[in-house]
Amino acid sequence: MSAMKSVEEDIELLARAIMVEARQEAEQLQAEAREKADAIRKRAQQEAESDRKEILARAKEDADRLRSQSSATSQLKARSMQLEQREKLLNEVFEKAREQLSSVKARSDYGEIAMMLAREALTHLKAGEAEVRADETTQKALKLDVLSRELNGKFTFGEKLEEGTGVVVNAAGGKLHYDNTLETRLDRLHGSLRSSVYKMLMGEKV
Image (cartoon, rainbow, N blue to C red):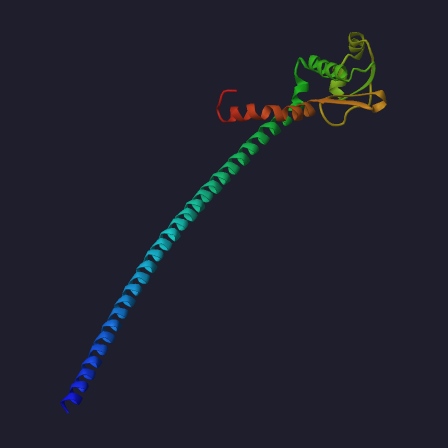
């Protein structure tokens, strides 16, 4: 009986030992699981923080870029307005100059100016024979016989100019043409004078 009891006790002790061991193993597994969970949570936090920093950095870059673009757009608009204003001023200056061209004919030295306009056009065409068209005032001021002797050519008057002040010369049956009216000369000068006129408008030295 005692032997049986001893066996039962041994079994009970063994069972307890197994239970304790199983409990310890379970606790260890739980501890390891907690550690793994903590590690995973910590890594997730680190990754989240890293993502947060990256997102913030990107947001800052985007904001800086947008501010830069906005600034550049504002500067571009300001520059565009400045150019428009400059263009407006330039056009006004040249328009006033154009309006005053006809008054040149009233100058006491207009005869010399008319001869210069015709001489320049004839010299440019380098033609032995040419037809000179001019407005009425210019035609009266021109001495084609003098220019014919001076340039060794044969120059005659054509139809009067209905528009413009100065001369238009045709040669070689109309194949050669040179417009030397004051209006056309102003147009030719427009490009080269733009910078100088703008500087004058801005109060700068030319």
